[in-house]
Image (cartoon, rainbow, N blue to C red; front, side):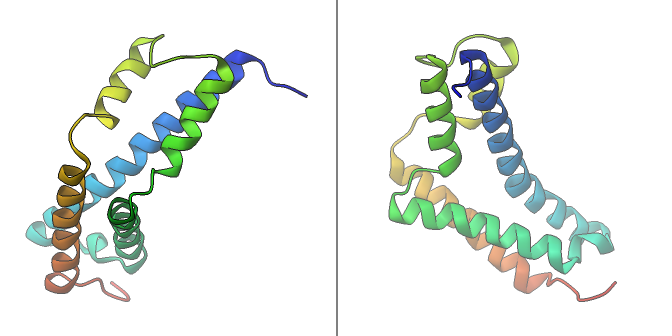
Length: 134
């Protein structure tokens, strides 16, 4: 059974929001870890949170190093194609979420940014290590 174009468009938008949430977790997670270090928040040292954060940035860096397109980008593009949408138009929220997620620069710029950010995450892991129980 084939889905209607608006269902594919909805799935593309949902994928875009998930992509933005992943980015927010990676960047915002590091900000919260650093704030937790400065402010003595115990939860910012929770092992599960820290492992998920480390794995998330590690995934991004490996994608960048090996030139792999993010699976969420690929999935969203496929959903948009199936919806018959040529580009990113239609709707205020979609437009602004896109502008936060997608930007233009040479690939090496992003690889360098991701690598430096991952270095910060790893340094924080050792300087402010997670604890088994708090």
